[in-house]
Structures are given as C-alpha cells and as structure tokens.
Amino acid sequence: MSVSRIFLLSPASCGGERARLLVGEQARFDLAVRLHEPGGAPLGSVFSFVSGLYFRGKLTYARSFARSLGRVPGILVITPTRGLARPEERITRDDLARLGSVPVDLSDPRYREPLEASVRVLAARLPRSAEVVLLGSIATGKYLDVLLQHLGERLLFPADFIGRGDMSRGALLLRAVREQRELAYVTASRAARTGKRVSGLVRAS
Image (cartoon, rainbow, N blue to C red):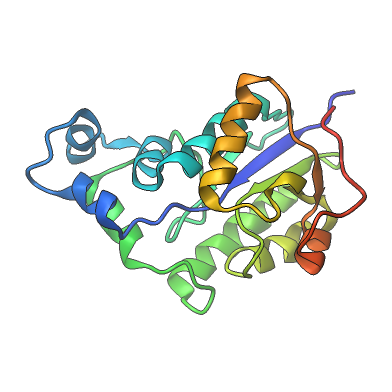
C-alpha cells in the first residue's frame, strides 16, 4: 500500500528587498498586480518570488512527490503569522506586509502560537502510516522544535540537504524533479543531532 507523504516547506523571508518590490505602488508586473487586487495571489507564487531558487525548488519538488491519502493536504508552508498554510491560499499586499513584520522566532507568540496550533491539528489528522518531510533547515530550532514535539519520528529530512546551502538545495530539488528521482530521507531528529550524513535512510517508495 502506498504511504502518505506530506511535505512541510520552510518559510520565505517576507521582509527583504524582493518583498518590497512586490508591495511597492509602482510595481506593474503580473504577480505584483495580482497581489494588489482584492483576490490576492497564491502564497506559493509569492514565496517563490521573494525567496527565489530555494523556495521554487521546494515547491516544485513537493508538487511532484507529495502523496496525500487522507484529510491532510500534500503540501503545507510554514508562515510567520498563519502557522501552516496551503501554497494555493491567496494573500494580498497587506497580508504580505503582516508576514514581513513578524520574525520567524519561537520567542514571538505571533509566530509560535499559530504554528503550534497548526502542527497539533496536522498531527491529529495524519494517517498512522503517514510520513512528513521537512524541506527546510534543521540548523536551528526556529520551527524544528515545534515540529518534533508533535510529529516525533514521523518527521523526515532529505539526507542530501546536509552540508548544502540554500541555493545548492534548490538546484538539487529541481534536478531531482527533472530526473523524476525522489530523494532519500532520514529522521529529522537524528539528522539534527549529528549534523552530517547518517545511516537509517528512508527510501522513497
């Protein structure tokens, strides 16, 4: 039987120069125009623009390999103010400004509380055999601590991410999609403890 595999994507920086390009009144390119309209633009498209190659790689990879068999979406994005959100969720210019005003820091309740609530709901709804793959950094506890608290050993991490920077990870993910080759995963808790390639890989099935 196929295993349900859910992907969690780490957040893009919403307070940088590219985000300011999107919210500027003079912006006339398509994504900015949609962001300024009442219906907004998809969160995944906005994060792909403000983050560039890394987030685009994460989203493209997750769309290629996610397998959701229950009530849980196959892809969820960690956000600074909304906890876990679907990449299809639409946001406006004002929403992006709010996202950029809150740091991804567990000491800030505006970030921590929505994230904790979302992860609790996710853990309760996951099928027993489901795996959750974090496409993001495990170098800090800014979201890993909350994820591990509620997901434990079900939280996985691409083994090939270890030792790579963001741009290299983005390129790796896009290459894997082109080759239709899913990466091997290791439990995130073990990867965080060792900080290097480890045994016990979970092979994509």
